[in-house]
Length: 483
Image (cartoon, rainbow, N blue to C red; front, side, top):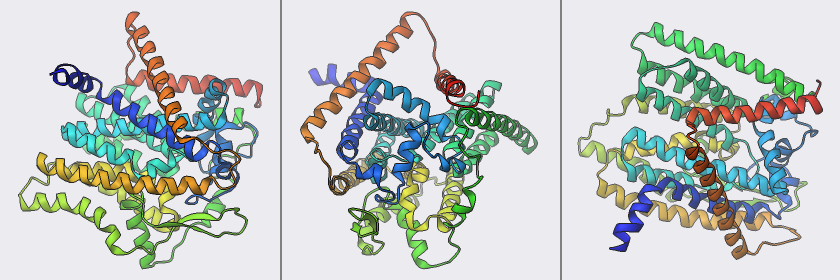
């Protein structure tokens, strides 16, 4: 009776907070276990699935590093470095700051996926399972622990999608919404330019839901595009003032990136796309250490020679609900519009990765994994509650066990020549303490807001973030840049 009267209502009331806290603790633990004392990750390039972590690490923290990749990640410095350096002043340790920020971001991705799925399918349990599949995916567990930019781009896209669903539900587009959509869209583009693909299609998804006439859709899209262009030039000007030596978008390094384009056609490239989108990011298959010149412990790479039977869990995961829906004559067109837009976005990413970075598709997995799991959630919405309660927990258990072993393998690789080694149980305790302190600070802030009757909505939080960024960049422009 105690459980029924006290514990269950508490869990139901605070389920998002509990889910966020659980993943924050897990991610902090993994981040510290893999990165905290392992210098190899931030000293040697491309060693873990081709991630250029040393460059990203110094882009996050250093004012005077050679930020040459800003030429293809145009606003990474202004959107991320102020937050990292402000928090570095609080935590002192650069590495722990990185671990903390990335843990917060991926935990937010988990919650956003759960909320977005529920808004789409109105099924709490299925939304929860889908968010867990994303949260314990091999891609999420790896990229929460090593410095990379893709999780930040995905955060801006999911915030944009949440706003799109809010506006769609409200059935009205305000001027304030146009500004917020533009800021989030240009920010996603500013972290990872290829994310302009989902930004454009999500905007069309929204506008075609609001307006029946294509003339109105085009007019509103051009308005948003115009505001995005204004944001683009404003961001460019401010970042150039603050970081005078940083290149302009696509200037200088565009030719270098052309070298990564492979126009050849082969079955291996097709296999890389299939496994890179629907297998490796979700649960890890065979990867191994490969000797590589100039790397003290070699590099980690997926072998590309896995037996077909290893793909069976993923094939079953995606095909089973579709077959079930056909056999039981479910209305597969219920989410026709969502399926069409998701398919267009995923196919666009597949085409990009077919020609660019095909041998390193896993590196880019955080760009598209969010759409893969949303697609999975839509497919399982055709299944009965009993099927969902059996199939997905079994897969999650399998996924968790496989990924636990693989993450430990990555941690062992990263600890090569480490001068210190972490006590795992101390890390568990520390991650729980940090999570609790974060929740206490968050709740104190929330109580203060409620006590004084301050109303802060979703868009106000977004504007608050940009206000902090702009103040920090103006300060840099005065004391570090050209002003």
